Image 1 (cartoon, rainbow, N blue to C red):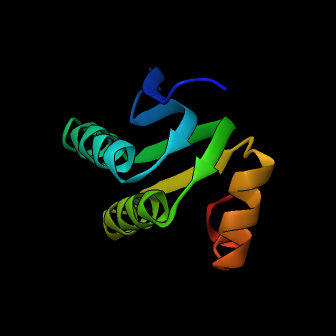
Image 2: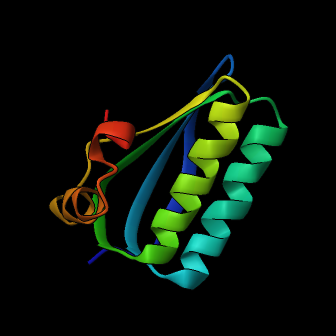
Length: 103
């Protein structure tokens, strides 16, 4: 399995693309939160996160994703998840956020 990684892969105007890989527990979710907050502070209004290689997606990760979604929505922006792994799809579906977050 691939190690945790959360990197900005592309920025076009106010749209910022990230790729998330590996296992996302509390420590990794904290790093994600910090990185996403920096993206919003630097002007990102639309965030898209590719999650095709995420193997573990915990409640800590859901909390960060949902908090970021709410921040962006409050500013007229959006957050979407693209290419979710089966694990991500299952977790997001269990908490009934699939229609809100999946692209």
